[in-house]
Length: 78
Image (cartoon, rainbow, N blue to C red; front, top):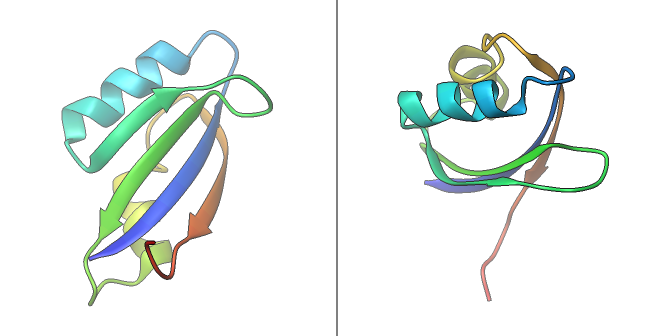
């Protein structure tokens, strides 16, 4: 599994609804509300054989209320 962090910006007033929709899908390891330019931070493990972009598109980006995302790939845990 590959660890990926995704910052999520929601449409105004939608962050709780988006967080609930993500939680119901059970695809995340951790999900936090945040301050700053993004509303949510999600830690996600993507299967080794999956295309990361397609996995995120298929499992996350169809949730209504998501305005923008920023994905950070990880390489090694210390």
